[in-house]
Image: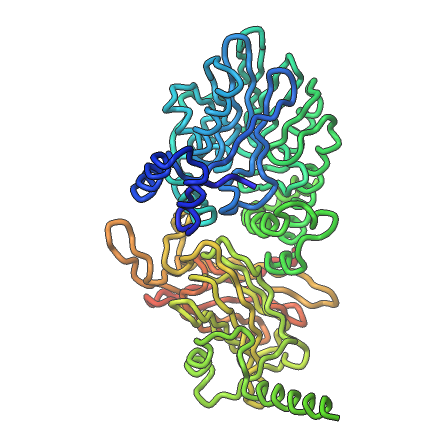
Length: 340
Length: 257
């Protein structure tokens, strides 16, 4: 699926490399580079192709899959909006390599400068590529609490991600800070293209950013919205998240790009996130109130109708432990409020 | 005719294998493990009717909740032992019940992918063993510092909660605040965090001792111990000591939630 030239520890590597090369000299250069450390030049490739979703708006759809060595952690949707003067990118992808390829792919559509990159939240699949944007001198925007979380949790998560997808993808990736943080909605103009950056705090993460292009009606919802995939809840307040979903549903959008999953043209897909996080909250709250062990909650597996969602099993496993711990630490009054 | 004979031979072989206790997890460590903790001459049988509940894929290896459901015919057990093949601390806990227990749960550390065992000693001296193989995605539950690095507030504080179950039965949930240091964590400056863990726990009520436990640092930090009793415990008391000789105690008089 993903073109992979010259991957490490692959005996076919020199062959596929020379096949791709134009001539013998280039093949030789490729082999020499391969034996040194020039991964950036010849390593794995994400094969990013901008998919137009509206005039001047493009999406790079992520794979609806777990983090695997095949997809290099490219599981989130990213994209960009082109104005008459400049470009705004949404997300930085999971690795520096992705960020660089994303910038190159944007370049294949427009010569206008990329002015902004909006990172919707801290999670690795959205944020770890931001070094590529910083080094290109682009304004990288994030919520400050998410920037802090990225700095604190990033190194351990990068190690974990590398173990899952392989160093061929993550090599060169470093945990970097955004150039600017925002806690209030911001309006930017890309040149005849007014774009709103909305701040939605304390729902899915401490501060999720949503990008709404008024001209086309395209909205990038980040991980406030998962479609066909089990939403993850490591930093979530589900009650607030549900309120945010109501607000997002009522925005004047015509094309909705979720953080994960297919692009929406109506809000029916919101049910995937709403029903799942409601279920998680009520099931785990019930367990805490009745003294059930997380082991007992996990034992029967993911119930219907959620079992068929992408990554339902692993996400359920994580969510039960995360929410159980949080709810267990609450006092009875807080639990009562949660149960309402 | 020939196929019938083959079948009979195969059945005999399977029976023979079970009598010797062939490890369903196929772990090369099982023989030594069972010899060390269940006894060199122990009679061991693998028993599917014991339910060992835990996730089969683990990302948070410092704290893995497990629950052992004891089948009816083993509720007069003499001892319950929890073992982890591939841990640097293989023995998690030994529980001696003084009353019939329906289930026992706790949160444990897993160093790497491993079989986990719940071994129950019946009154006739036979060990019944449940096995679950667990894939650990993020290794180091015993040897790496806890991911959130939080400091345990008051070592030895005990919280006791009792939950009503069907038909007057009850669940006791005990949390002991303790770092449960394994002695295998090396800090960035090269210092080793010395082992420091809860060694003994006694759970009792007005009617006497419910269970005695010996525990090791393969239990998680701030361990949570859950036991299911056929009847409600009255004025439950939990006491014990740790490896530095600190004694602790907790009382529960609160009404049922």
